[in-house]
Length: 77
Image (cartoon, rainbow, N blue to C red; front, side, top):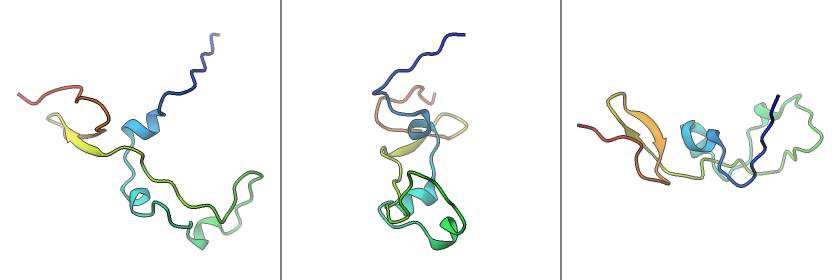
């Protein structure tokens, strides 16, 4: 097995997985019902939510939402 770890690149979750509700909640504290009964060693319940870092727009015939940090991967014809 070959395992590659490449630090510095944006996550695929930041580039191809748009989360509109998380974008609305960006910078706000998580709702109490989200944290109810949740225990984690390194998550502070007083930390703000972090929404998408890039703007998203629809591309292609299927209107897939992709990030706009680079040129579109395809063009409509």
